[in-house]
Image (cartoon, rainbow, N blue to C red):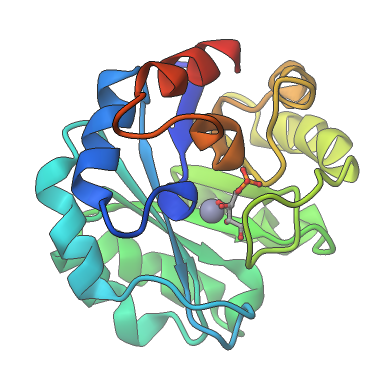
Length: 218
Ligand code: DX5
Ligand code: ZN
């Protein structure tokens, strides 16, 4: 299914109110829920351990997409799988054995994604494409929401789409997705768009229709 999916990043939600925020974005049309896991080491910010992800799980009725921005990855795969992730995405830059990491994710029975930072070339994932359900192209340097879209990701997406051919692999874009940049990456072949600020801006659990307007605008 190549229709465009919107995956709001709860990094831009009210941190005191995740359950309600998740239910609000889903009611307003979110296709997936994107959870940004940061370790203060691979990226300069800290977010959600496995117990937090486990607490989100009962509120998610769509699909929980867990983006691990952590190094090392392997010691935590089982814990995030048990916490209820539907898909676990690891960064190719996070360690020397991305193939082993992706095998370990698949062994949990979850879907597997591989992510590339803006400075990382596509050929770094050439030999793991047959192991993944999704490739995540970062269009900001990971760590924070609200950053400016890095445009080289558009051409990278086009080349990745060609590289994937007819394999059933999603292309996800994360970082700086707005109503200006979403059409560019969608035209280049992306089918899952992560958006934090562009979904949550102006809305709240008390004014959830703004989330719906933002999602439809994307
Ligand atoms: C960045 C995260 C993103 C981020 C996107 O490290 O992976 O998911 O929250 O936020 P926006 O959409 O605001 O750029
Ligand atoms: Zn993310």
